[in-house]
Image (cartoon, rainbow, N blue to C red; front, top):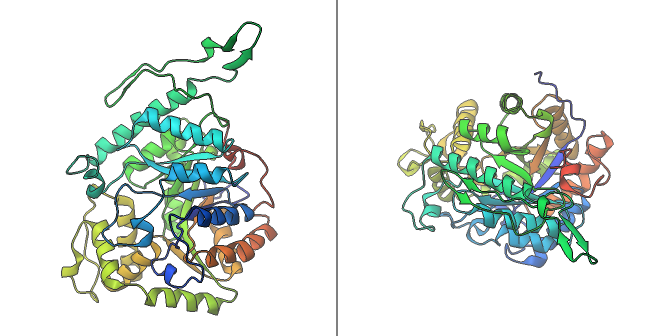
Length: 433
């Protein structure tokens, strides 16, 4: 498989943080919205749809964070939020994060099928396994199941959810007033699943949804994460600091998809990226500098310590980043950050500022042309099928991306003028399930 990407257009997701993705972003906006204000979130969703983003993606966590950021301390439950947004949008995909470690397959399959009905075929599920002990303590446990157990449960969870979604065939609802028969019984099947983690009879108590089933999104670059994605994901979120690193991941993930007996073209890989958009390059650089001067280094150090599972406060801030063994937690992001520190010879202080500011994702600072050049290179050289956009300041950086970057991508033939289809699957180029 060559590095050359056969896709001719980018897929774009908006990774939504109502107060901006940069840790200091909320301090620079002139229109600070609240993370739990539905009117504000409707406004952001409409901006994203006006820009023709493929996805409006809502992350989630089942615990508050130790670093007391607005975006991690208070948030609306994603499926509830997206069900509301579905009534105010028409074409943009609506993706919600939900954990397989602390959920039930029947309940979650039903909820996502409901969102798919409400949105008329625009639902997506970002499948996560959770990794924080703080989450475990909100679900009557003192610690998390180990990495292998979490992924084993996730695999079975997805298997059961798919069986539940497939239990209703096309044509199962055929109301016949003359006979009094509403359903075609032979088109509705039980699951009767007996597995290691779940025993579920079925069928699901909701009819087949417009897409057949929601689009499945996964993230994670660990061995288990890539294997699960190869077998089950249709969109893969990832983080990559360089084109070379992105190409390696892209090649590895697509090869594993093929080895799993699936078509690699039906798995869309979208690294996260924080574009700092300026009308001039100088404007963009000045904004990036201002954002980073506002980073609370103590807070950044706490974030880094939590990710690394190591108390970094005992290390000199202006010394090198210490060696960190990969543990049971967020392996892929730890690896990305430590490799970035080595490659760029960063001090602990510098890495803490970057990690806090960009949440460990790549940052591109420049004009619309600079950002389009970068995106085009990654698309054409097999580094990505698209990107999950993380605006640093909301709504200003989202507005500039829609105003400046998207028209430049369209000028190059890399992004469509409008949505071609009504369902998310079709707009992403994925087969109907």
